[in-house]
Length: 247
Image 1 (cartoon, rainbow, N blue to C red):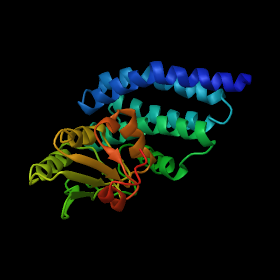
Image 2: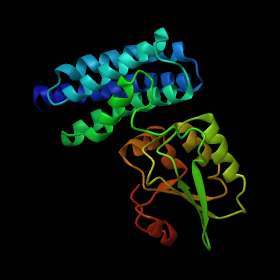
Image 3: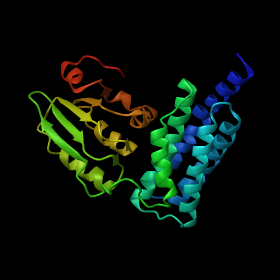
């Protein structure tokens, strides 16, 4: 193993064992709208990640992106950026993306630049949404009944707010004792862990499948261990046939 490889392995060991648990704590605080506390918890691991990736060969894009996320969080901390639900959701999405980005760079040496460009564009808007419609009041889910399953199609690009989650919960409460549930994420770019927690609460009585997730949603899904309660399928067909499971 080269010196560079040893550095990378040491860094990711620190990320998994030390930094990511701190980040999860900070995200939980943001989700609870305890903004100052959440940013304080996040500041040290993010600052370290920014610094280390800045001198690790091939990981410089992660350092640049983390710096922009830090700047946004500082603006939230000082009040320059508001603390409404859309800004909190953007903060959480941005922090989660840091970890997706460094994993992509580790695995393939490249990353989803379209996703990071989109997030950076919204971060630079100082809390104003750019290039995206306000979906906070839009019903985020559409139900579709099949013979032996209930399909829930997510209809928004981002799902974080308590208002959206309440609408999802109300839809789930209308279930007529189905044995199988499928959630289709095809048009959804990112979601908070609270959505997966809500879905997982039905896993005792239903077989739950997920399809159509992009790398960002998948990262949140696995980071929080939701594979214990539901299964990722390649397609609707593989879910209905119970074949083609990939995760």
